[in-house]
Image 1 (cartoon, one colour):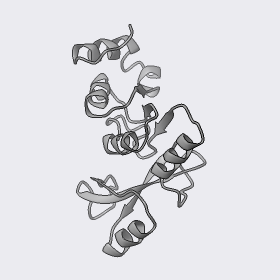
Image 2 (spheres, helix red, strand yellow):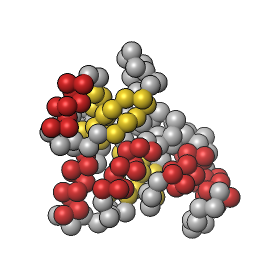
Image 3 (cartoon, helix red, strand yellow):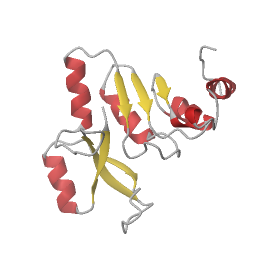
Length: 158
């Protein structure tokens, strides 16, 4: 699942999204060009295609519920807005998805340091965390991440 935030800037947009049944959550506005940058705003998450380039009207939460009904075994959740940013995982998205499904959730996108993994496991019910860039660029190692999260009380295999 590759969700992307659809920000709701007006009461009319909020009302429309609610009437369409989207799951609305409050998040920090990440759009630097926005007047509300850094402030708390409402959004919903669009299930995207083409690597996050094409938005759909399908709510990512509805997609997760649907694939669970169809027999999926787990959810790989890749937040397009956080991908490659190195600022941490999208905790609000992960919690929203975890609360909507009984399936294990693998959180992807956003990790920039070992501490982001301990935040992930302490603040969500994600079963696993995924990262690539920080390991390819040798910013940290898998062993360093595992040692860090173990020191924070998160169990892991060594």
